[in-house]
Image 1 (cartoon, helix red, strand yellow):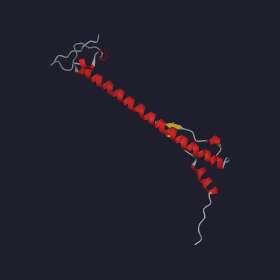
Image 2 (cartoon, rainbow, N blue to C red):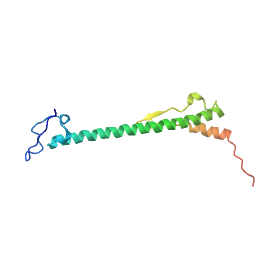
Image 3 (cartoon, one colour):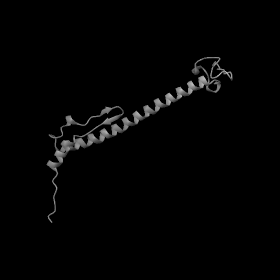
Image 4 (cartoon, rainbow, N blue to C red):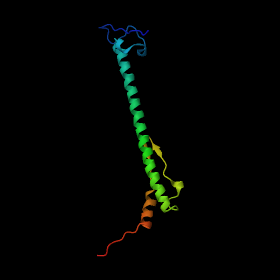
Amino acid sequence: PREICSYTKGEGDRCTNPVKWEDIAAEQFACGVHMRQYLSDREQELANERERRKKAEAEEVAKWELGFYQDAYRRLNALDPELFPLDDMPQLRWRGVSSDIRIDIIKLDRFVRDHVTQTVPEG
């Protein structure tokens, strides 16, 4: 059986039955002390859940980005295995909640310069 906290008006936020709020049914709160503790704990749970969801979403996006970059890298490897060896395949690196996945832009610029010829129409 859960205990009921009691509050005597005029005595401030003082509980005459100082039990832990977890042992009291929410509808039985009668004092500000327990109500504040209850709200504070709920707010902390909400903040923790928000952080967990934010991290899970960031991980999901990072996995998608990694797949995108790895697919692009495999295609580059097929075109120039020497410049884009599979050992250099982009990997996922975490910085806090954000991820860092990159294809070496210098290599990519060199590849484009060496392999893509632009034809300029004579005019």
